[in-house]
Length: 474
Image 1 (spheres, rainbow, N blue to C red):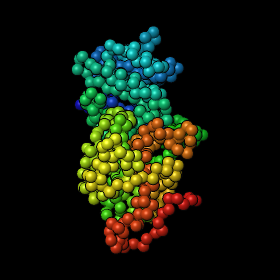
Image 2 (image 1 turned 30 degrees about the horizontal axis):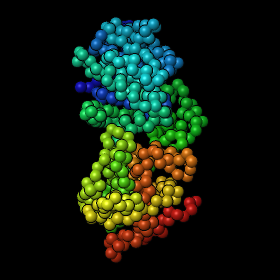
Image 3 (image 1 turned 30 degrees about the vertical axis):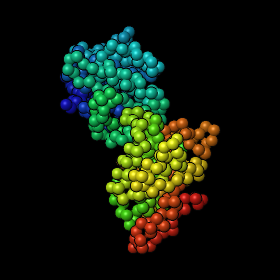
Image 4 (image 1 turned 120 degrees about the vertical axis):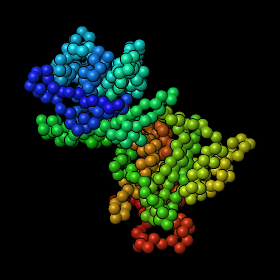
């Protein structure tokens, strides 16, 4: 079922247009997704979208259309109510100050509430609403209020129900919003997913920037320029809606537009493929599928991350033998025989075989990883920053199917006691496995391995000087 965008005309006979959605707002207003997150950059018209998205159901569902709209604090709520007066009063809405509720002539109503603490959401136990909205969702440090209100979003009269949120990158809720709506979800498309407990839902992300809001661009043309006064990470977040940036991150050079690419063919004559592996049981394991060419350019073309679905940093607790078997099945299909692995996997498990023996028995030639953390981080940085070839592409890129690399790498922060290292208490398993790959001989001497792989290897092109990851950058 599609939603009908609201009619935004006054009550007089002249049919005066009070509000007109811009293109991105129109897309969001018409979306039938149960969960929708709207926004990204500052100035995209987020609050107006929420207010008019609720109004979209007023005329159709009448008294059965009951909504609630949250802000984090009361002062923030006051600004939202002020804007509601401008939009709702000409449309027949009456504001009840005591209850902080807008009521429409046919009985539809929208409550305005603030949730200063996550636990305050429990005040709504037993309530039911057909529409639930959160303005500036990034102000909530956890997803608890959002997920709890999903349980309150219901109708006993067959009325469709919706969860709506808006916000910008960079807030205290940055990580969970990015995980729920951004990573692995193509913008504008409705994605079917399954919540914990097997509940199927639909979810959508509609990005919006200043340029999408012609009214703001016309009325305040210098607003975009003023954003340049912000610190770099906040400028990228609020001006460009960049969800891969936040203060204190290790890899602030990571750019989704530059380092994440569509898959393409990796011919064996030009690319050496190998696997890298970081062990995990109660925590996730990470299998990275890597390819390197004669210039030393590395591509992460696939991955298998052993993390419980819809959980963060929780392992699937699969046996070593089963993991080794599945890894080898993938390797056979892709012509891979070598795997760089954590040195701890060579340790004996009591009287039984070591973990690495399971992988060797499956068919892998296993190579101990260089676990130098300081140099490994330095090389990781260099590969993100260094450009190569005629097309000037980064020395490290990942295919867009590597969703857990794309999710976890930008979220890493430095170790508090050693800023030259990554905080190992975070979800760093893919980082460790990727570091093993970059510190391997495959990455340092790709030409040698390509010749071994292809015999008298020759691409037919004049070879450029091989990239040295240990060399000083200009």
